[in-house]
Image (tube, rainbow, N blue to C red; front, top):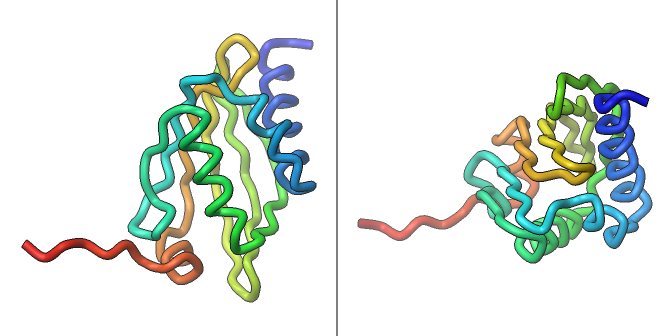
Length: 130
């Protein structure tokens, strides 16, 4: 298989593991210094560094029991884009998740999602008044 096919298979394996609740396998696919970027102002938005922070993020994400269905993978070099359909209760949306893969591990994930939908599902961060 080519590097791109290997990278797509790694991402596919991650989605399958997440969907089946196998967080141990999901975490094994990440580099120790992984960076995860979740946009918006929801309570789970932010930039997470390292496996510990990413594991906590995934636990918070999973608390609402999302269903994530992988619809398509696109690869270019060390970048894999996963097009997904996401559902939480009655809320539904589509994401484009961008993975950077190096040496067989995910080093960065940047989620492109409907941030308003995420805020409806997870709530909005409270910001201190200045």
